[in-house]
Image (tube, rainbow, N blue to C red):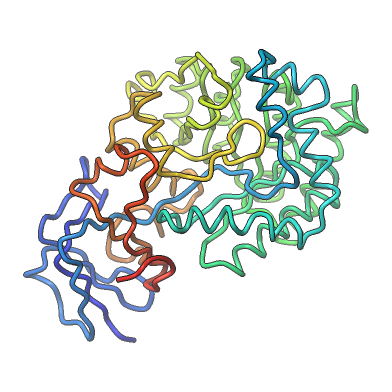
Length: 402
């Protein structure tokens, strides 16, 4: 196979504390993987050389929490919130998740793919080459599988790696109103086994909160996932402290996400289990929340922090991961390095992909971005700007130009 050397670059490898910066750096790509990283003067022989003109190279970005496959939109709820209604009030009135469930059930698989593709292309143009896509808007066997099939198709039809997460335990569907335990029976006995048998899910998630499911119900879902050898994740501590983070850690979860109401016991448990904290500033912003996630607590206990868009039609209609970097810094007070690490190395860990993605290191897949920036912190500094010059996935150019 040919060997291509990208030289004359400044590297933020994120393979070491700090930026892992290499001033006069080079990256050697062979057979879709990074074969070597280092100082340009020490570079091995290559069949082809690309002069990067002093641009910065970082690992490609990873959006590790999205609900990007859905039907319809919820702009009317945006107006309701601006007129004083809370997210919980809207949900209890038949809006929220259930509004999107109705639209998603009515959409065909082809329609879901067609609607989601432009959203993913916008992320790709900003340097995102890995996207997690959750179900959770079908809430029955056929429609949950339909969402997951649509997500798998997007990974085949677009130059992006898709990780699918079964979120059937997102909310009780209308036909199970007042019978949440019976719906959890369906999730555990039918939906999870079917998704596993068809190879449609890479992980299983649940919404453990006041408008979702109780810790007891959630634990049943996590246990069922483990019986089918599926890793678990959890929406935890978004609206209240249900001790979901501890529950997630007990089951060795890849991540616990949101975490505005996380307490110290939850942080300690996450550290012990290696569970990543995924912060979602888009939802915090769109819902006009005031309870900040306890970033200092996560730092204190060394819990890895990831950042994601939470792209969804209700609580985070965000289609820019670069904007999330800025929000993570301005709203949550992450440093620019923490924010960038949160959409690269730690985001990879949150999806169980740390061995293949997230840093510029030999042996990892050649997913990286050339940026027109003066320093890596610029990625979190600018608002509404996309400085990506070229996006490469497995060594192939998938967006921009060189």
